Image (cartoon, rainbow, N blue to C red; front, side):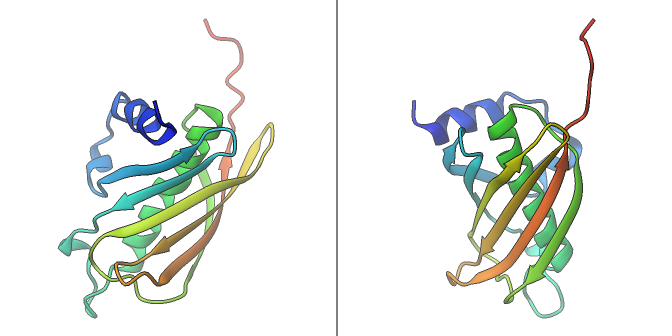
Length: 141
């Protein structure tokens, strides 16, 4: 099974959080060893700001989905995001959005990631770096 299909199957089998339906996405590509994923999003009209573009908070929510899935691909665990630094390079237009995220470094306590979003116009719109926390769960009972 191709890596993208394998990751999509894993994600589809996970319990869904109430907010997870907000930014629907599909997996285009995945590299488990590298912790790299490419996702496709379809930002909804409700996401737009007064200028008709995706509002920044929704764009960061898409970034959070990207980094969460990249961290999951690498570690096979859902890790809490502790920090996101985002830079808005250009307006993110409504329509099909391509996102890419990769693990920069995975340590025992922290995972460092990078993510990017390209709009329907093909232009880079958002660049972000992020940190996820690896909880010390201890022995399972």
